[in-house]
Image (cartoon, rainbow, N blue to C red):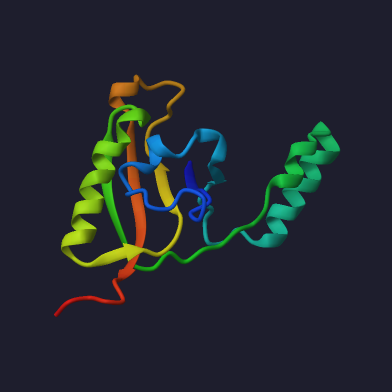
Length: 141
């Protein structure tokens, strides 16, 4: 399972990467959950599966499922081990790396959940924290 996370950057401007998880209320976060699909799965396959689920199960929430592709490009990522509420310390390492290498954010915060958080103790959760980046426009040579 993967997730893209973002918030209104105009409303909550001035927050550093490590401070955003505590500075922006959870109710203000937007997100998109993702499941990586094999290359042979097509948009048509997904639409057919949605029709089948709706017909057999009557599950209306399936309408929110969509075939989605993305290209992140250059990214900085790190493995976070531990509960979600300790991610700010790990995000600080990404922020420091980006500052050192004159990189700035270039997309939504991306988390890749390697552990099943329903079955794994919070202290053992493994999550890849990824930030799409680009070189700072005013990069110093």
